[in-house]
Length: 314
Image (cartoon, rainbow, N blue to C red; front, side):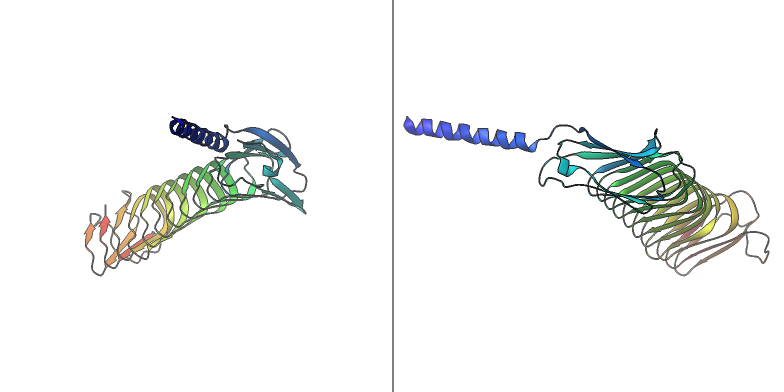
């Protein structure tokens, strides 16, 4: 009988310990724990750097930079570290608990008339922007494995960088250049108007839609789908990369090269272009015999080449 009681109490104690540990490791939902206001006077650079926090960059109703910190556990040592030197403002995450279900989200509000630089980084958190600023000098959004989501973003230059995370953007306007870099994370971008757009990937799948301007694309084994394209550019895959280019309007010369992948080209009905197709071991299927090689300098030239990949022209 005593042995049974001892076993019962041991079992009850074990259950209590497990319940206690579970309760200790379970945090409540996030709530606003801290708000910081920073003067925008003479500031020309805002730099934000976090590890796993989700970041939302939006417009402020005031004339100041406002940082709101949402956390599932309120401790002062978790608050962001803010530094201000010369013309720059730096915002970094505070300390974080180890091995817990701690949650946090930062909301940074920037005045609509701010025209300086924005540099935003989160290693594994989501980076989202909803800005209406039309005169930003530059915007840089960077993540390692998180997600970048930027809509209605306008600046002189825009840079989106990811290693394995997702890049998803709509309505990007750049007076100068848009640069997108991804190692393996998928890229989905539409409604772009830029003087120049550069894309560099290793194996990322890339989908572009409604793009205007010059596009320079480089990959090793990634797949590219470009539709509703008005512009010119150079597209190159040094390995297995394949590409489908659906062109609405050509404004200048266009070249596409893939070492081992397939190149599919959908051209507009206009006959104002010169077409050159070359392959070493692949097959060529050309349904646009009306576009032939020539020497006219007044029309765009289209050069498509592969080593082992097929070429399809419609």
